[in-house]
Image (cartoon, rainbow, N blue to C red; front, side, top):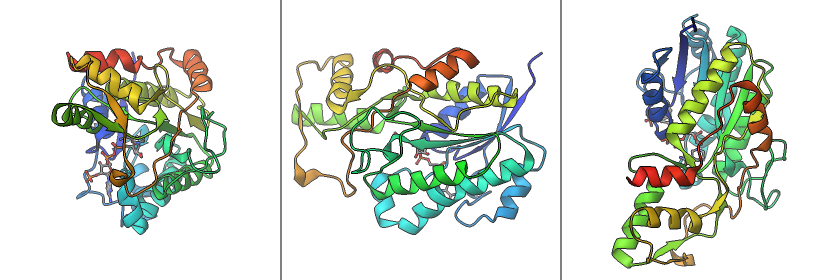
Amino acid sequence: MVALRRLLLLGGSGRLGSHLRRAAGDDLRVAVAAPSRDELDLETASQEELDSLVGSGLYDVVLNCSAIALVDRCETERALADRINGVVPGMLATAAAKADVPFVHISTDYVFGGEAAPVGPFAETTPVGPAQYYGVTKAAGEEAVLAVPGRRTVARVSWLFGDGATPFQDYVLARARSLSEVPLLDQASRPTWLPGLSLWLLNLAAALQEGAFAPNILHPAGGPAATRHEWARAILDAHGLADVPTVPQTVESAPLAPRPKDTRLDARRTDAWIEATWGATLPDWREMVERAAR
Ligand SMILES: NC(=O)c1ccc[n+]([C@@H]2O[C@H](COP(=O)([O-])OP(=O)(O)OC[C@H]3O[C@@H](n4cnc5c(N)ncnc54)[C@H](OP(=O)(O)O)[C@@H]3O)[C@@H](O)[C@H]2O)c1
């Protein structure tokens, strides 16, 4: 009989967190506790509070999806981004190590793409080099987690999309319908399907609970890397808008924080570890774009 996994999920109200709760809800072997911000405000929580929560004996695995994930917001609210993205992950890793509970922290492809790391694909072991403050704080969070010895791992994820409304898809379809063209930044990364990523993370949690020793950093990805134009093309084709062109976005509508041109993650080491651990890698994002449109 497979033991029940009791998962403590931080950031359970967010995009990834909501998909994880849904995936866990479909799996009778997983019980999730996801404290809301009212129950646990990570901006003000002390190390003692986190130690007592994680060390309560109620949880088998801790998964941190909490973040200030809006890239432009991190430019204007730097102290908050420092705290939630940069400091809290290390506090959670410390609490998990004290309780001898495995800890998974979610990071981002945006730790790459700056001057120090301008061209991918980036392996799990490539030194980071972010292009904007969001990436700086997320890189600090990774470092803080990995400084804590214990059963902890960082999963870098990129360009998340689900079956329902997704900011990028909404943008592409709205521009296609209103402008008859879709202006896009010159960027490349790896689109990642949220339901598949959620299952992947639940499998990771199970493997860690059962004693697997994970690498420091994992790159979950399914299907090839893509440019924004290729991702948008797949969305347009799947929605019967194949004749709408994608065009370069002009400087006037550029976002506040610099966006990296290339943050493609190389997932080969991660895939090899997964094959040897639980076997199922992520589905190809192109098939999932089509499925999401049906
Ligand atoms: N979305 C993407 O395409 C993408 C790409 C690459 C990497 N990532 C990474 O994936 C992870 C999840 O991202 P996401 O898109 O799911 O983010 P999100 O939707 O913005 O969710 C962030 C979560 O953090 C929580 N949070 C923020 N401040 C908090 C505080 N003071 N106390 C308690 N909880 C707090 C939020 O709670 P509230 O609901 O109370 O605000 C929310 O549950 C992040 O590590 C992000 O860096 C995301």
